[in-house]
Image (tube, rainbow, N blue to C red; front, side, top):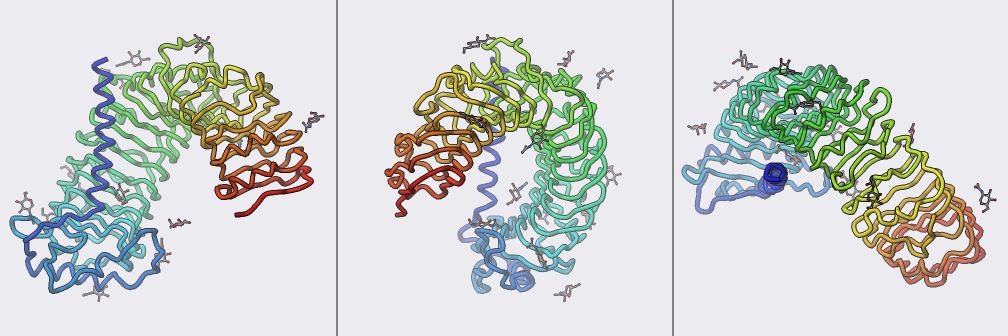
Length: 497
Ligand SMILES: *[C@@H]1O[C@H](CO)[C@@H](O)[C@H](O)[C@H]1NC(C)=O
Ligand SMILES: *[C@@H]1O[C@H](CO)[C@@H](O)[C@H](O)[C@H]1NC(C)=O
Ligand SMILES: *[C@@H]1O[C@H](CO)[C@@H](O)[C@H](O)[C@H]1NC(C)=O
Ligand SMILES: *[C@@H]1O[C@H](CO)[C@@H](O)[C@H](O)[C@H]1NC(C)=O
Ligand SMILES: *[C@@H]1O[C@H](CO)[C@@H](O)[C@H](O)[C@H]1NC(C)=O
Ligand SMILES: *[C@@H]1O[C@H](CO)[C@@H](O)[C@H](O)[C@H]1NC(C)=O
Ligand SMILES: *[C@@H]1O[C@H](CO)[C@@H](O)[C@H](O)[C@H]1NC(C)=O
Ligand SMILES: *[C@@H]1O[C@H](CO)[C@@H](O)[C@H](O)[C@H]1NC(C)=O
Ligand SMILES: *[C@@H]1O[C@H](CO)[C@@H](O)[C@H](O)[C@H]1NC(C)=O
Ligand SMILES: *[C@@H]1O[C@H](CO)[C@@H](O)[C@H](O)[C@H]1NC(C)=O
Ligand SMILES: *[C@@H]1O[C@H](CO)[C@@H](O)[C@H](O)[C@H]1NC(C)=O
Ligand SMILES: *[C@@H]1O[C@H](CO)[C@@H](O)[C@H](O)[C@H]1NC(C)=O
């Protein structure tokens, strides 16, 4: 029990850390009464001319040319985005995230004379496919460097490893190519490394395993190859690991894991070509496990994940699943979100019956046939907000209800089944309701008028008849989309407010 709480606390702590971190990098802290030295001031003003050239204002939503508000005759320590050392007025932090910077970043940029910088955020700008100038290697006191989403290209240069104080490095969402460099292993202080969404190749280098402070490693959406290395699972500091959407292969090895704190693991969209071994249960701290479309050999056994008691988020979509009835209700993890889409399921998985904390459930695109069983109404009865049963072979309800249960439902998708009989009325809290492409018949119950949160009502391709209840007009202020095509309505009374 103690140990479980410990894991939970760490997970929570890391999440809180990100929130507070994101917050602190997006607002500028300024020190009152500190005057920046003139050299710092001019080093800041030069890039204003270099980069701010009136970009289209909708380049990124919420972007704002911070530098335009900088006035030469004022204390640069008070400028938006600038942080100074209170002792000597040296610029130690510069946050120009999403600031309309536009044009190549040249090696003669005066930014590189801000030698005292500890935090530099240039994310969400457009440096026109520049490579990273080697002058970055001189900013040796940097602890935080963020160049994400900024139209950089070329290889990740080795002098990055000169920045030995770096704890947070983000190079994500650029066009970096070449091998995933091994010299990241020299950045011994790293806590977060994000190189996701580039075009990096090669295998995950062993040197990464020496980073003893690394807690978040994001490698997703590249072209990495080779086996998913087992050393990643024995790194004691790692909390989040995301090498999803690459071409990584098996075998997965989870032996010798003495104390894993890993709470987030996504291997989705890789090419495992093997089974996921049962020893995955050794990753006892996992709260998020995302394994969609990993191309396992044969069937994947769902029940092996039930040993992960902390698990709340599980994505097994796009894998051929085997679900056995051998489990003990009282020891199942309490899931919050479950993705079991395209898993070749033929019936409603029984273990769902005891899931009373479920918020999100996706069972779409399976081959679940026949009636929706009575017990199913109790799945996440108090908690479920999103339910997707579309693209199955459901015919009707074992126990029809006038209004479907689930008090907190927001999104309900029943499209593309073979549902017969009258249109089931969604829970009254529902905002998005899809029941198109079924075999629904008869008149729509006036009860639908009570669902006054509806924004989308998609009922096309059924055989509904009669007229749309008059009072549907009552919620037409929230209703944005109403699709009734290919039904047999005589009259449409929808009022448009
Ligand atoms: C900006 O916001 C609009 C409306 O909110 C949205 O349609 C558009 O996709 C957004 N653009 C970007 C680049 O995020
Ligand atoms: C910096 O270098 C670029 C290209 O190398 C050049 O076009 C520009 O004039 C230089 N700027 C200054 C201030 O020297
Ligand atoms: C870098 O940090 C060290 C240690 O905090 C300090 O002694 C040194 O003056 C800093 N260098 C610069 C250029 O700020
Ligand atoms: C960045 O600027 C270049 C022109 O230098 C332009 O072609 C490109 O579309 C821009 N990239 C983005 C993401 O806006
Ligand atoms: C690496 O850092 C040292 C100072 O520690 C500096 O003298 C050198 O120029 C830097 N190398 C590069 C390539 O920037
Ligand atoms: C990384 O560190 C090793 C050992 O200290 C050194 O030999 C190597 O040159 C360094 N790599 C880079 C790119 O700085
Ligand atoms: C880098 O900036 C992006 C965009 O602002 C942000 O999402 C990300 O968390 C930042 N990463 C780091 C390591 O600061
Ligand atoms: C586990 O540890 C033992 C002893 O340290 C070692 O012989 C074995 O190769 C390790 N197995 C794996 C899969 O790392
Ligand atoms: C890991 O899992 C395997 C197979 O489930 C088991 O034999 C082994 O004892 C476990 N090791 C640790 C350290 O948990
Ligand atoms: C449905 O699942 C099949 C495999 O069972 C897959 O080929 C197809 O792409 C999936 N369709 C959708 C819409 O997800
Ligand atoms: C699990 O619990 C449900 C009631 O929540 C019960 O109907 C079902 O039989 C139980 N299943 C097992 C395998 O214990
Ligand atoms: C729709 O239901 C009717 C009877 O309720 C049945 O005769 C018909 O075959 C069904 N159509 C489809 C496409 O399932």
